[in-house]
Length: 437
Image (cartoon, rainbow, N blue to C red; front, side, top):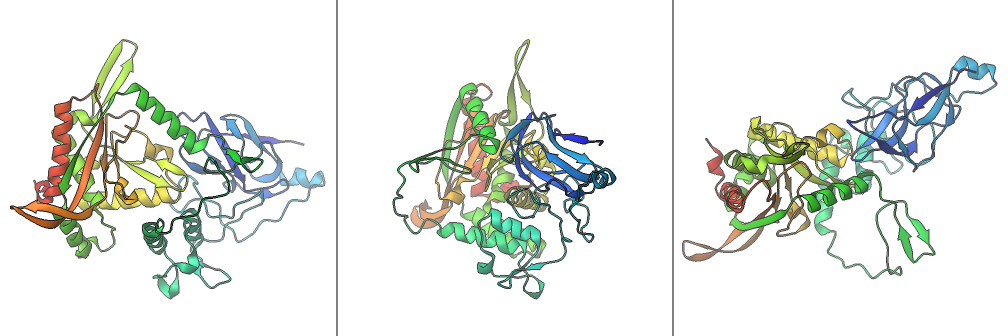
C-alpha cells in the first residue's frame, strides 16, 4: 500500500518546533486537500494545518500535547482506492462542507471547531448562524471568540440582525466584565501553591508543575534575553490628559468614526509616532556583529502594541505606522486587537517591530517599568486615566490624569534623549492639537 507521510512544516520564518495541540481528524477519515487536519502552537501563534493530500488518514504519528521539530513526520495518508482494497472503511465526509480556509482566503489560522480529541471536523458555511439549545444566534467564529474571552453568550446583548450576536457584542461584553472582575475578593483556596496556566501535571493535589512551552516559553526567553543584554533605564511623567479625553469623546461622536472603536490608546499611538520622529534614537536598535556592535536607526515606525490574550502576551505591530492617518491608524489598532484576541495573530505580524506601547492602564495600573521588546530600544507604558485634583491657573480642579513611563536601552539612547521623548509624548496627550502639522 502506498503511504504518503506529511511532516511538520515551517509555518513562519525560522520556526524550529511546535506543539501539536489538537487533531481534527482520526484514522480512517476521508480528507480533501486543504481540509484542516490539526492545530499546532508555535512560539507565538495557534495555527491550523491544512492537508496537502486527498485520501484517507492512515496513522497519527504524534500525540496531542507533544512538541515536535520541524520536518518530523506527524501523519500518514493512503488513497481511498487503496484503503478500500485493504478493507479500510473511510469515515464519510460531509458533502456540503466547503474546503477549510480562513475568512480572508489566506493561510488557515485559528478556527471555530469543537475542541477535544482526534475527531473529524467539517465546517459548515461561515455565513450560516448557529442557534444553540438556549436560543442564542451566533456564527461559529463568534462562538470561538466568546470561548477564548470567557464570555457566556447567553449573557450577551445582541445587536445584529434578527437578534444575532456580533463580534462587537462579544468584545464589548468582555471589556465590561473585566472592569468588574475584581470587585469580589475570592476566598483562599485549599491548595497552598500552584502554577498557572494550562495542562497541569498534578502531584497529590498540593502542587502542580506546568511545562513551559508555546507562548509562555517564547515570552520568557525574550524577556530574559532583553533584561540581561540591554541596560534598562525607566523614566516617567504624570500629565493632565483632559484634552485627550475631550478629543476621544469628539471622535466617538463623529460620523467619520462611526464604525471605528476609538480610545485614548489611539492618541497615545499618534503621540509615540510623532515623538519618535523628533528623537529617532528611541526607534533604533543595538546590533552585535562579527566586526563589532552597531546602532541601526530606523526611519520608519513598526508600532508594536503589547496585547494580553487568552493565550498569553503577544506583541503584534502595525507596519509603517508613520504613514497612516488618524482614521487608518484607528482601524489598524482595531484589527490588531481583534486578531490578537481571536488568536489569529500571524508570526509575520509579530516580527520587525521598532518601538512598543503597553497599555497597563486597562489593568488599573498607574505606572510601570516595562521590559524592552528584543530588537528594539524603547517601550512606552500608558497608565490608567482617572480624575484627580490638579492645579490649573492657581486653582485646584478635577482633571483627567495619567502617567506615561518608558524603558530604554541605555546603550542606544542617553538620559537627555529619553527625557525629551517622554516629554514629547506627554505634551501631545496634554494638547493633542500639536498633532496638526
